[in-house]
Amino acid sequence: MTSFIVKRGINALLTILVIITLTFMLMHLVPGGPFTGEKPVPPAVLENLNKYYHLDEPLWKQYLRYVGSLLQGDLGPSYKSQTRDVNQMLADTMPVSIQLGLQALIVAVIGGLFLGIIAALYHNKIPDRFATILAVVGTAVPSFVVATLMIKFLAVELKWFPIAQWKTWKHTVMPTIALAALPMAQVTRLMRSNMLEVLNQDYIKTAKAKGLARVTVIVRHTIRNAILPVVTILGPITANLLTGTFVIEKIFSIPGAGKMIVEGIGNRDYPVIMGTTVVYGVMLVIILFIVDLLYSLIDPRIKLKG
Image (cartoon, rainbow, N blue to C red):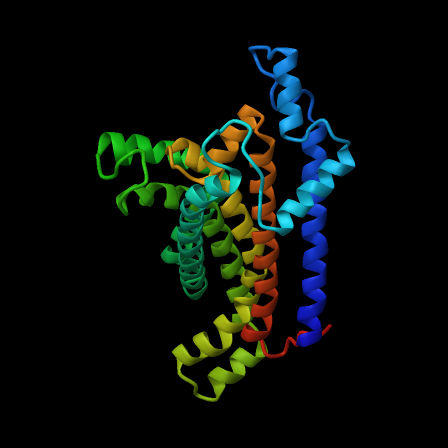
């Protein structure tokens, strides 16, 4: 276990270094510069700006300076905001994105597991058909279409929920459902197919033949073995939910990191883009590491080794 954690820790650090390097290089390969726009900047002012932000230095020196700042927890200044740096901007916006992503993850996992289990237990019956239809619709319809339809009917027509802002729990309902629709459909389909496969295994038939209660067979033997592939996709699902908040936050005018990075791309605010990408990359690496640890907790047959 210790050797596994050490090995994964080293791999995680290397992965983060690659993310930092690629993000830095891609930002400097983008045509134009952070201070180029519709209104041209006087050459003297542009020279002073480049000197102030160390953009006149060689690329390798800028890279080393940026990595050194990251090691100190400094994501750098914002080229467009005069009052806040990237750390302060993320501190204000990231909690909102994390809350939205976690709410969508909880809804997707719990809702998907419930629908998948019910569909498998009532195979080819009304609950199965209902869950299958929801899964197909959730997979086929993009999140921004779901968000638009919810705004149209639930907010404008029925006036059940407010359209924009992020204040009370009512403001979080529609964005959470819109973001959770696709991953919930994925979990439902995967859990349903795994449950049907496990229910036909010999050890399930043996457990029933021993006289074990139906609830015991389902919970201790069926669900525990069928849920492992679902855990496998939790890492990618979590990553998609965190990065998928960009579009949802823009539609619902949510003051999160997704909206901030979209505005940063439009403003060519490179430190904002790089800082947000690095933070999301670190979060993804940590999430994948936690998913690996969950394998051994759910299935004791899996042993983590270096």
